[in-house]
Image (cartoon, rainbow, N blue to C red):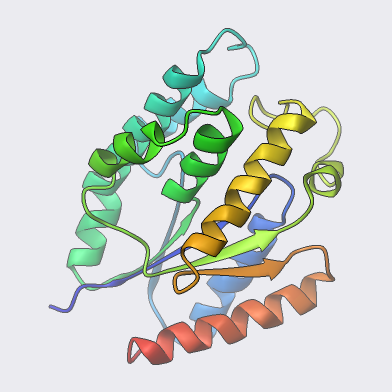
Length: 209
């Protein structure tokens, strides 16, 4: 069976990924396309437990490399148990965050550099997204969108951290222009959805779907 199609959705905190993922889900349902939606960190029982540790605001003593390895561990389980098998069976997989997040948040945000790519080269098991939608918004504005008191451990980092993360995403967009499509997420929701819909149309046509 033909290997499936792997699409990821990325962006800094407050970019509106949840809203646009709901749009993408409806987009596929309306076209009768069976897509598997999953998320990172998470996607399996083990990975969800790791997610809880990573995002728990009480874990203030967590070292940057510990954080990076936990993300990679969660991803390794997720790929082995969910993403890999689905793609090998020809499924269309849509994932809320993947390795680009680790490069942006830990590579750039935590200043861990190339170690993140090395670690995750093992975690991804050879599976790289076919296409990535990057929702772009200035971190100052993005964090304003998140309700006060609802920030998890990552969202609670200082603004300098979030600016480094955003710079990391912009670098990835430049480095992988054929895979990553940047979309201005500061506009009205409907405009963003329309642009995402057009991009997905292109992705599906390119893959004869």
